[in-house]
Each structure stands twice: as structure tokens, then as C-alpha cells.
Image (cartoon, rainbow, N blue to C red; front, side):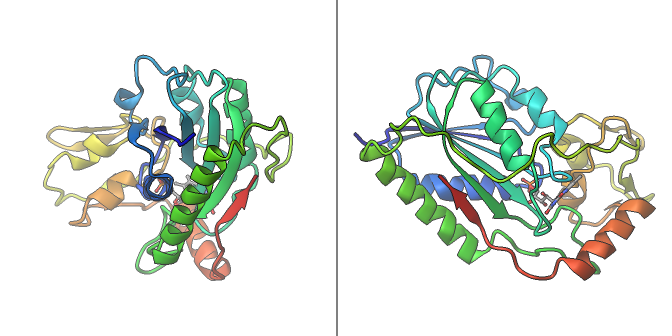
Length: 264
Ligand SMILES: Cc1cc2nc3c(=O)[nH]c(=O)nc-3n(C[C@H](O)[C@H](O)[C@H](O)COP(=O)(O)O)c2cc1C
């Protein structure tokens, strides 16, 4: 039996998670591919029932060693109905800590059969030219690994390799790492911003309103940096001292390249 219907479900403000998932899908090479991009709330399907899918792959970025809280909201209505699922987290070359375990638990709770997990590396959302962090990842080698992983999944699927009852084990601890309280801060737009509205359109939480000025609601901002990356003119900046300090620290201490990990 080959995998004919593959569904990707991703939350991916700066698109690295989505790129990894698409490369895995290329390797699976299913006849039919559905992509549910839940980065913005309007991407969450009305009917989030996966019973008609052969295989599902869920991907999310790692924020402070956990899943971003908004991912839990976006996936709250997801129904697995025993469909095999592959869980993928993408992190910025520091650590993924409890995020993959949290995603695996979420999928089990939604009724999926968890069959594989993976952690890939993406360019860190906070990366800048002055403080580069895992720049350009996933790169060619990462994409190659993602495609091979997809091909391996397809071959396991067709040889009934997901039939066993053994439970997927992935790294991580319980209780999960404690989340620090959100600080009601956000990137800012410079005075010469041309008010094109791209930042508002990409913001996953609706934190930005562009009118005569750009107004950002710090309580809604998750610091994902989608607004900074989309503003190629450089009018949107992360000028939060605490984040700049963390970014410098990461640039100094997380230089060694980490490699993707796969767990069955
Ligand atoms: C608020 C925040 C917290 C993050 N925390 C971590 C972390 O704990 N470890 C890590 O290696 N990368 C961390 N990152 C980096 C992201 O996991 C990484 O850039 C990922 O590729 C982003 O995925 P996306 O492109 O799909 O949005 C963090 C990024 C943000 C915005």
C-alpha cells in the first residue's frame, strides 16, 4: 500500500518549518498533498478532521524550548482518528528541549498514532547581519536529509512499518520547561516606514495595525519576527534590549553546527 494522501500541518512565521515540511513531503511523494498552514488563524480549516488522510506531518518552531502557545490554540480542534502522524520541530541551532515531546503529546491527545519525530534546524528568527544565527538553514544538506526522511517514511508506510503498537519515544522532560511570562514588547517600525502593510499581513497573531502609523499590540506580539523578515526595506526593527542581549549571547555561544535528528 502506498501513501496516497499526505497532509502537512504547519505553523511557520518565518517559513523555515514550512520549507522543511515541504522537503519531507517531496521525499514521501504522495499522489495527493494537502497543506494546512495555520500560521494565521484564517488558515485553520473549519473541519480539522484528518480521518481521510493516509499520513499527516505536523511542524512547528521551537520557542524557548517549548511550542509557541499559539500553536496549541491553532491545533485545538484537530482530530487524528488513529491516522499515523510525524512530528517535526524546527529550532535555531540552540536547543529544542521539550518542544518535540510537547508536540508528540499534543498529537497523541488529538487521537493520532505517533510514528516518527524529527528536529531540524532553521535560521534563528532573531538572526541579523551583525549577530548571525544559523543563517541560511535549512540549507542544501538539511533539505537533502528532509527528503531522505520523507522517502524513508514512504517506504515504512508501504511495508506496513507503522502497524506496530510500540510508542514513539522522543527526547524531552516532564514537567516541560516553565514558560516565562510574556513581557508586552514588540519590534518597532521606523519613522520612515512607507506603511505598505506587509507586516500587518504576515503577523500570525493580528498584533499589527497599519493606518497613518504602524501600531503594534505588545500583548499580542509573540516576537516571531515575521514582520522584520518581510520588511526587506529594513523599516521594522527589534529594538528590545533584552532580546538584543539574548541574540548577542546566542551568536557568541551557539556557533557549532547542529544536525537534524530523527526518532522512530
Ligand atoms: C520567541 C522565540 C524563541 C525561540 N526559542 C528558541 C529556542 O529555545 N531554541 C532554539 O534553538 N531556537 C529558538 N528560536 C528560533 C526558532 O526556533 C527558529 O528560528 C525557527 O527556525 C523558526 O521557525 P519558522 O521559520 O517556521 O518561524 C526562537 C525563536 C523565537 C521567535
